[in-house]
Length: 553
Image (cartoon, rainbow, N blue to C red):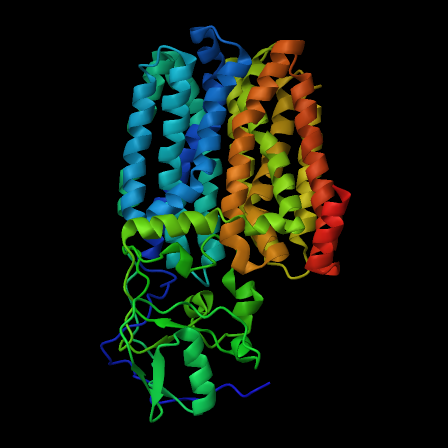
């Protein structure tokens, strides 16, 4: 392997005017951003968890079947996921703060408009699809904002913010039941609309990350003209070398990122070259594409690529960049070009040829049946002797409380080097499946409460481990694209799962079969992801893996 070219020139020092990419402060205003994200999770997930409280009342009001009524809540959850790539592209085109605040307004307006619905179809459009878009426009920027503000404390910050989901479910279920009892479903939804508007304040907290440190290592020239020439040729063939210095021979629009592997091995030890002023939370220049670790909710210091470069900024390693002087400027793309590029990046179908990803996606789709439990459990509970509507809403609160505890516990367990996240995930899915099946045979509030608590623990575990498992199996480079595709698949599954369960109830007249099928889906997913996927991921070359997989189809 050829030696890596030596970079000569003095570091610019702390007093230079040029600044590096904004580094995550791991504190300071980041805690205000963390608080905003936490409150957004409370407000938004609380709404999604509590639809089951309105389910029976909506069915009675519109005189529809359970299958048609379930479509309202499933559309809300499904569209909030399916809109992920679209909203990510909006963040790239505009800014985190702008998109989040616009989403808060859309979400609030959609719930208010829902009170005017005169049919279940109109309610599905206003409450379901429009509300789902608004939720996604707040939810996704919240996650991204935390990712930009925290690196070393990422796991702690994500643990705090994700706990808002369970707390929201714990608070909203009895709150919605009370509001519905006092004011009817329309009055309750109008009040929820006003409460949701508080997400405006949450979005307003998502200020851009400002540089806290001056650039420490700006290199001015590269020694060893042969390797210098080959490296700069990869970056841009129109650059030429004059007396050991890099100059422009022609004007050009941008420097493409250096991604290909060089035959002399230089790419293995030299990150890409790019200009410094590329990323800002409020800019429109490839915000999401600048960070491949934004959706990773574990501690970045646990990743091999960060452990190998402990002396460098975690931010710079996440970018994989070395910065060159501003003599070479990048022409920023317009907002809609960034929107288009981000849509293509998150929905790129290249991963569809990877059997490990396909099997992961199938397993993740199977565990979306937890929405069936959340939607139908209150209605099932009130059909049991001695169970009141207040107690049925309390079951969702129990799920929310244990969900919160499980998210925090799963984050702590995932940082243990001796613990396999795949094993933890498989156990959670298996136990969660058994609890679903047990619900179908339980007829007292106390048994249902115990099973709801177990189910909430399991649900919080597999939800929080999803990005960590994708990184383990596919690598950090594929995380954003993988999550974008998985979100779309899960969005479709969320949209149809409760509907199918409702139709099944309309056909057989019992909630037993839907709950049993949901439990079987969890068990299958857990067994499959633990036994088959790791074998493909670690023991079989990708080319052979693909051939074996498609031969067996």
